[in-house]
Image 1 (cartoon, each protein chain N blue to C red):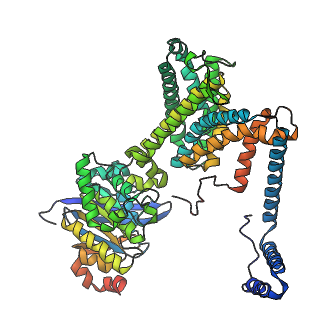
Image 2 (image 1 turned 180 degrees about the vertical axis):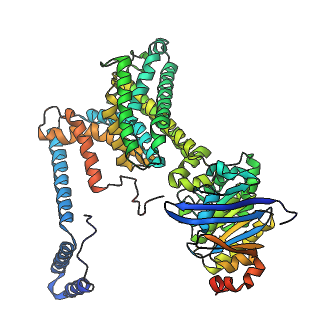
Image 3 (image 1 turned 60 degrees about the vertical axis):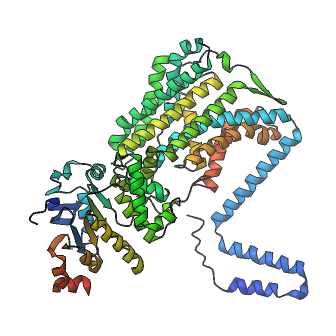
Amino acid sequence: MTPGASPVTRSSGEIPDRAAAAGGNHGAGMDVGKAAALHIALADWRRRSTWVDMVMLALRVSLLVLVSAGLLLSLAHNEYSAADWLSFAVFGLTLGSIYALISLGYTMVYGVLRMINFAHGDVFMAGAFGALIVADPLIATGSLFAVLALIAVGAATSAAIAALIERVAYRPFRHRGTLAPLICAIGVSFVLQYTVRGFFGTGSRAYHDIPVLDGVVILGPLQVPLVQLFVILAALLAMGALHLLVQHTRLGASMRAVAEDRETAALMGINADRVVTFTFLIGGVMAGTAGVLYALVFKQIHAFMGFAIGIKGFAAAVLGGIGNIPGAMVGGFVLGLAESFGPAALLSGFGIPAPYQLKDAIAYGLLVIILIFRPQGIFGERLAVKRM
Amino acid sequence: MTGVSTLLSVHDVDVHYGQICAVRGASLDVAEGEVVTLIGANGAGKSSLINAICRLRPCGEGHIRFRGQDLRALRADELPGLGLVQVPEGRRVFGRLTVMENLRLGAFCRKAARDELETDLAAVLDLFPRLAERRDQAAGTLSGGEQQMLAIGRGLMAKPAMLLLDEPSMGLAPRIIDVIYGAIAAIAAKGVSLLIVEQNAFLALELARRAFVMEAGTITLSGPAASLVDDERVRAAYLG
C-alpha cells in the first residue's frame, strides 16, 4: 500500500484546459483568478491522492501543530535562561558524540553485510568494562595520558570482541540467507551481558574520579563541565580518523568496494572475509571509545546498559540513513540534541512535571517520525534496484 | 598449439544452477600471448563458464588450470594475484568511487611500489584519455562507453598475464565499440593473453586467432578464427 500507487490515472488535458480557462478570466480581477487557481490545484490534489496521502497529511499537520504549540508554550513559560539552553546544547553534543560513535558500527556492518549487528550495544558496554579492569592503576597516575590509555584499552577490548563475534557467530551463517545471524546476534547479546554480570556483578560500577577532567570551563555566561568538552573533542577526533581511513586508504577503498559489489571486489583480488573482519574491528574501536567516554560523563556503567544505548545508536544510524557513514555521524548528533533540547523545548510548555524523564520518548518518537516520513533517513538514498 | 605453452586450460567443465545445467562438458585452452574468443548466443552459457573459471560459480566435473595450477582449489580473490583477471559483463564499476579509486583498486592484488603504480596508471590513462578527463568523477556518472573503458583499465592495473573480457561491446554505440576494440587490440599487441566472450561475433573473430562456439551449454565448434568466419554454420547463426 504505497501512497504513490494511486489507482487514479490522470485524464490528460483536463487540468491545463481548466487552468487556462481560469487564467483567461481577466475581467474578474487578479484575486479571483488566484483563488480559482488555488481551488483547481486543491481539487486536482484531492483527485490524485489516496486515503493514505490524507492520513499522512493529517499526521504531518497534527505533528506540526503539536510541536509548534509545545515550542511556543515552553518559550512563553520562560522557565530556562539563555545559559540553560546553551548548556543543553553542549550536553546534547556530548550525548550525540557517543551515539554517533556507536551508530558507526551499525552502519558500517550494514554497509558490507546488509545485516544489523544487534549485539553491538553490548560490544559498547564491554568496552567500558574492559577499561574498568585497568582503570584504578591508570587513573592513579593522574595524567591526561592515562585517560587516553583508558580509551585505548576500551577500544581494543570492544574491537577484539566484535571481531570474535563475527568469526564465531555470524560467519558460519552468512551464506544461508536466513534469520539465523539475527537470532545469533540476540543470543550473543545475552552472552555478553551475563558474562559481564558474572565478572562485575549486577550493580553499577564506576571509574574513580579523574582530577584532570574535573572542573568547568567558563565560556561567557556558560559553565561547561570539562569532561563534556573532552568527550566531544575525543569523539570528533575518532570520527575524523575514521573518515580518513575510509576515504583515503587502500583498506578503506576496499571496504567501500565490498559494500557496493562484493563479487566484483573479489575479481579485484579483495578478500571479502578480511574486509568484514576489518569492518567489525573498526566498528568495535568506535564502540569501545564510546563506552569509555560514556563512563567518563555519566560516571556509572552496568552490565545491561548496552541494550538501551545500543538501540539509540541504531536509531541514530537509521536517522542518518543506514549504510551511510557521514549520515550515522549526523544522526548521532541530531538524536543527542533532540534528547537534550526536546524535553525543555517541547514538553515543559505542556506543564509536564520532570520533562527530562521523557527524553527517551522524544528520541524514539523522532525515530518513528523519520521512519514514517523519510524511511531512507536523512542522507540515505532510495535503492531503486536491489543491489547484488 | 605446438611450441607455445598453454596458459589456461579448461577441460570437461560442468556448471549447474540448482537442477539446471548451464554448461556441460566444456573444454577450451588459451596459449601464452594468444587472443581467443568464445562466441555464442545469449544464454548459451558463456558467462557461466567464465565465472566458473574465475571461481565465482562452483563447477562440477573437470579441471581448470592456469599455468598448470588447479584453480578449483582457490578462491575468486586469489586469482588476480596469479595474473588471471576478469573484466565482468555489464562493466560493474564501483559507481560511488571515483575513476582513480576504481583504477587503484584494480591494482589491489599487487604489492607494487608507488612509482610503478603511477607509471601503470599513466599508461592506462594514455590508452583511454577520456578517463583522464574524468579522473575525479564518481564512476556511476560515466557513460556506458566510459564505464567499459574504466572496467578494462581497472583490469589492466592488475598487470594481468591473461584478461577475460566478458561482452566488452555490450550495449555500446558502434563508434564506441571501435574505440574499445582498438584498445583491446593494443592490449593484445603488448602480449597479454585474451579470452573474449562475445555475442558480437564479427568483431571478436576479426581480432582473435582462434575461436570457440558455444550453443546451449556445450562447445560445438572450434578452430582458427579465419576459418570460422567462413563456416556456413557460424555465418547462419551469428553473422547473418
